[in-house]
Structure formats: structure tokens, C-alpha cells
Image (cartoon, rainbow, N blue to C red):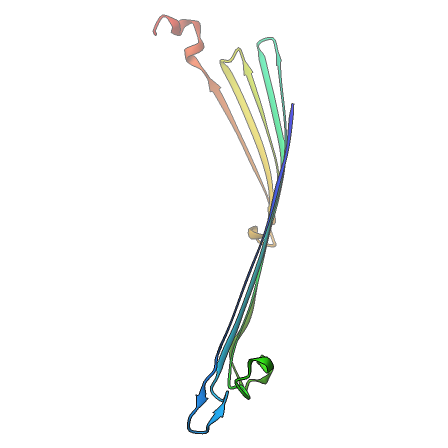
Length: 171
């Protein structure tokens, strides 16, 4: 038997500000054609996984089972503002509220999550005849609101023919 837990968390932040002071020589009014932008982005990602395994041999029969859980989340947000036309070029008093024109402004948010349960069972007889089956159940925000969960089964059968007695004469 074995149990494993693992996890991670990542946080990233990006912020950039730019102010370009200009002086309108015709009107000689500082800040009248100044431009500025502010771009702020943040993302958070976490992943948690748990896994349990168990194996048992009884005579010529080998059994193993595995079960697990996984949770993942991602969040991202961004705010961008670009303005022009400020009352002056004094950076101590600089605010976007003081501009005469918003040239571009938007907010963007993204979020996705996934939750998974999974299991697998293996059986072997005399290390020749093999059976394996697995089942995975995933819930994801990317699947769409009408179908948040999906179930994904699989199975396999195997025969190690080279382990058969009649094959020893051929090799």
C-alpha cells in the first residue's frame, strides 16, 4: 500500500504604468496632450492531488488497485486604462480621474476549474493473462454548463503468449 499527496500554488502579478508628459506648444498648457496607461494583471493557479495504491499477490494471482483525486483551479484578472489630456504634468498629483479623455479601458477575468476522481484495477494470472480496467470522472468548467461532468471508462485484456509452454519450443 502507498499513499501520496502533492500540491502546488502559483501567484503571478504584473503591473506596468506609463506616463508621457507633453507640452502643447501652441497653447503652452502643460499636460493638455499628455498620455498615460496602467496595466495590472494577476493570476492564481493551484493543484492538489491525492493517490492511493494497493497491491496483493495470492498464489498465481496478482491484484493491484489505485484510486485518486485531483483538483485544479486557475483565475486571471486584468485591468487596463489609457487616458489623455491631464491638467498638468506633475506626477505627484497624477490620477486618471483628472484626464479629459479615456482612450481605452477594459477589465478581463477568466476562471476555470477541474475536479477529477479516478481509479484503476489490474489483475494478472500466472503473469500470462491480464485484465485491466479504469474509470475517470471529470468535472470541468470547460465542458459547458449543461454538461459539467464526464465519465471516461476503459478496459484492456492481454495475453503474454511468449509465457505459454508451447512457445518455448519456438524460441
